Image: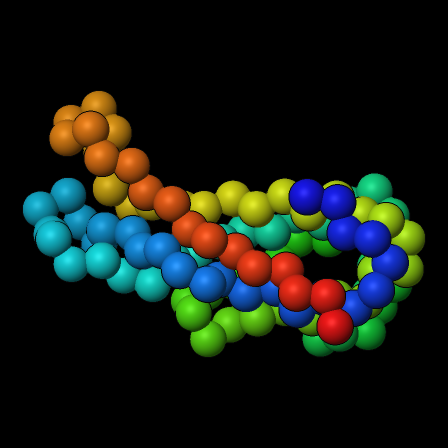
Length: 101
């Protein structure tokens, strides 16, 4: 997703992962974010950069970015189930929101 100049709040809206291959209970998701290609300021560090990595750990975690030049946001979701797609045909997904304020 391309983030145009402005202030954004990023957070996990929904989704779960399995805590183990024999468990039916889901856990809060973990998402790794890679933002690159422009100029951004992570409000936690207040440092202007062209590329950064950050993580969102669960539903209560959020990241606030000041985008100074258009930047690309990539998100990587981790599912801890080993071979889950091949064994039971299930798939996991996480919904990430990027709200411009």
